[in-house]
Image (cartoon, rainbow, N blue to C red; front, side):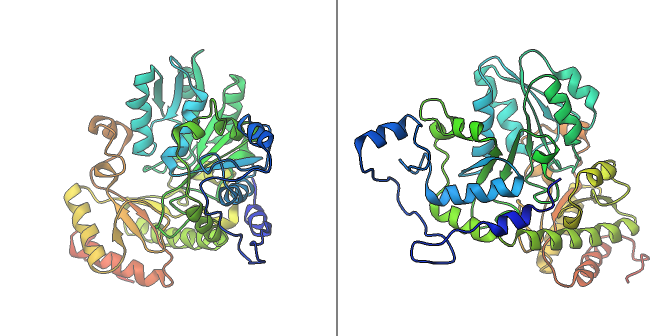
Length: 406
């Protein structure tokens, strides 16, 4: 575990060109060289610290990458124009035609679609398994397996991966463990638990303002450099480069991540506990009823809590839609995908962020039509929020009007 991650990010110091407290933004697509030989060496990847072309790297992206490496406790980090840009680059860097991936069955819909559908073009196969059952994971490994892939806390079912156990298993077969930590930054530190590569959608909690799309890969210096190789680097050749202006913006926002994560977790724990006591079917890793509760506790950095995501199953898609529309009308949040915003966001994953997964497979994994995913916001008076949400549920018959309104 890495409880000092926030302090490491806070301690990074970059002065602007004229002494500004924020680093100057490198608003250039290309960079000059004092000699032709230095340009040649940079193309060959032999000159660390020189900038060539912003698709390769830029000072603003480098600053953000260093902050993310400090956050996750890795040697290095690369930033990308989206979370999917980061995920696809890692997969294509590790896999060749005919290779195999073992992945969690519950992952972000875009990741699922990329693995199941797009990778078929390259004869790369994926086995989707219950990541919480190590024997199933091990039984799925073949001589062609090039990675084990999971989310620390899965989207949208909030299953908790035992990263330390998975890392031991991955090392047994000499394959990397790749962990998407988008749902649990600061709360869980996968690299310190043995993960080889940690991925983030920076769009979500790390940026926190729902105003840009970005991604990151935190890993060894060797792997991060391989992604930027001008001849064979998937990050370089796919061109999923983060704009310098956005990198600078995210770097500013990451400084308050520790404060925001604590509040997200505190508010979500409050709502999850109260709604479970009201008799609703609530899933949240902080609840003792959650199957992965103990696993999360053993892995977590305790001061940051159990995260800002919870789900409630209200029984049907019609009820879910009606509740979300009513909560939005009452200004309790927004009917929108994504997460990590200051305002609560809610959506029905089966018809939105997980719609790429066929309905039959959704049912097999326990993703029901009535499931609502909540990304709980930074409300100052969470008890008032609870009472207002509960009133909506009583109005729609999701909760009985006999349930005490406290």
